[in-house]
Image (tube, rainbow, N blue to C red; front, side, top):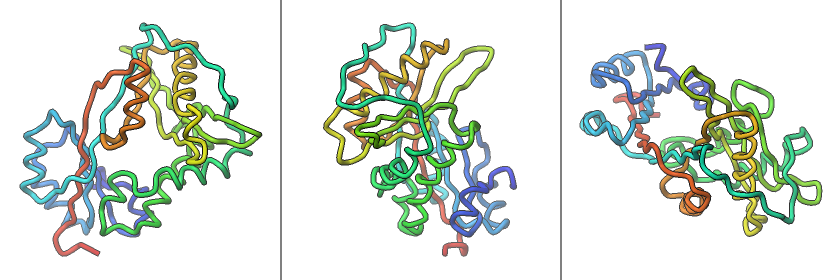
Length: 246
């Protein structure tokens, strides 16, 4: 059961939190054993194609909290050309971090499955995202590269990405990204993602992917306009263990 416990989430919220994924079997047994382990919250992320498991989790008492799709760009296809902008695209520097933390806090307020659960502390939900970008900046296990949009020497947007290499393919995945609310009419998000395509191609990768909530229509519109296609969809569900709800 220890394999299911999320150390990071458990430390953040102050009680045992477990995570389940698409490859589990016998979810009833797993939930029973996790409850006996004093787990309070179980988070499940499941591929929408796995309807049998989703329905099984629903029957146990899991509730829908968010859904996301994975947009993919095959780098064998023609890449959109870079454009002239009112800002510069640069590599991350420590001087960017304060602005990046601030825009992350504002951009991810009430975003995603943590915020969708009224039983969770909203301040701690917010800290998930600000801590995430801070770890991206110092830990190569979290992110390998961070593209930053800069205007007047101030960071106004960013995208952190992670490299993945296997014998079958080499691809880059977006980790987290945000744009300052005051600069969302300048094409920052589109420019950063075009830059990420050129970066991935220059480094010899096959493709690049990014996850987006299905309710985030502006981001989905951008990826569609750039020629990305959807390759996966997932649902996130929460279950509060009986007699363990805070």
